[in-house]
Length: 454
Ligand SMILES: Cc1cc2nc3c(=O)[nH]c(=O)nc-3n(C[C@H](O)[C@H](O)[C@H](O)COP(=O)(O)OP(=O)(O)OC[C@H]3O[C@@H](n4cnc5c(N)ncnc54)[C@H](O)[C@@H]3O)c2cc1C
Image 1: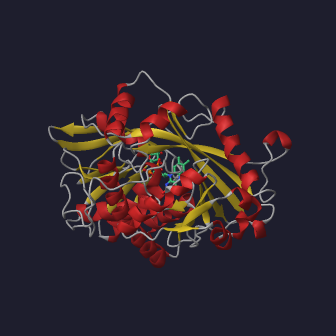
Image 2 (image 1 turned 60 degrees about the vertical axis):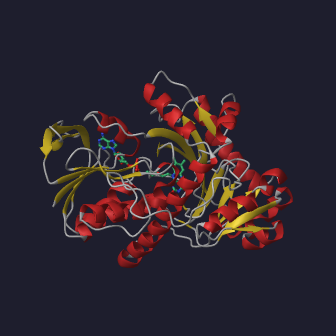
Image 3 (image 1 turned 180 degrees about the vertical axis):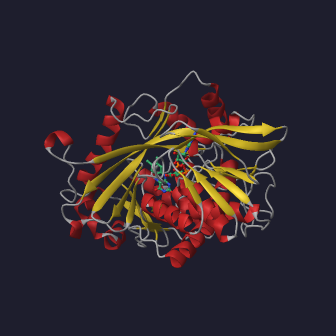
């Protein structure tokens, strides 16, 4: 088949790679001059199979309301005159109950486990280097009441086969001695030894280069302007070269939409509505001053709802989510405040370890923001659309790096006529097998809002 993949973030590139592995011809299109220059550029770097709880839980509506009035809150709903935002919000509210939460976690764990295996396969096959650290993820708590709920959350994850255990403060400090300076504030934590961290941008860019070496045509600097249909089938996709303004039409046997948050407006132009809405998040990447005192276990900070990962000689902190449209500004007072809040936290938890000075003080923090392609369930849309020849791989929300390798592999398998070996509701075919781990609706759940970095 000749397949055109629209979007060269982690999801599009991974899809392209797995299609090439199955002998298909691939054209990969992106408006940026290279791969992974939008949301896959500077995320929190966590491969977070074991911390995959969606934001939609029974406590979320009240918390969101409370948080609306503070610029420093982890989740900020900024109402717009946009029906897509309100519809998404209502769909999100419908997921805020225990039954939906458990159902969603089951699928997120299944995709996470499948994806982790797929990532390991790709790394073994290609030798890609991306500042990978296989030291697990530790979640630390500074509030006793929140920590009291950690055991229930861990028990739920264990039921789905995930290794998450509750650890005392002393155990946590032994797992990650870099937390010692902040130790007196920590009341305990949880730890998932099988999780990892690594740079999504480095991985994606190298995989894109390998795609080219395996015969893919990379069309960077091209805007995808229009998907054109003939009845219930896609006829072609019109793209325009940003450098000379020349438009061309791409034809073929199949098209994959992997445009992150922009998948929704693109699909809408051919009459297909998908519940994907942008969730803006920020990161700051700081040079290390004392690498020997820096963490190598990736971290989740429960109080600030942010994530911290070491990437070579840098420390990255990322988090917060703003539901307020496609705004990517970094220079507004609100954006600045949110970035500085993340940096301040690094200085509190790891004092003196990284250069946390502001640019005005002579520091060089690399601030960044990206739009998580969020679905109300946090479950991505992978599979067939109602239009013939048109497939989708988008809506990976807070977990696109974690789920990237597996989502790409799974969609390539479906397109190739294979059935991915996991219990997951693919679009256009539903779930193939009944849930493997039924959980009673009355199960008591700890549904504290998860950190947004992962
Ligand atoms: C602050 C933050 C922290 C995060 N931390 C983590 C984490 O620790 N672990 C994790 O698993 N996930 C994390 N995520 C989520 C993860 O980064 C995303 O889910 C993932 O990057 C989405 O990948 P994607 O390929 O779908 O989208 P993108 O990377 O945005 O790729 C889509 C591509 O489509 C292109 N495109 C879109 N529209 C057009 C058009 N019209 N024409 C041409 N090209 C177009 C874009 O240029 C882009 O390259 C985080 C996200 C944020 C914001």
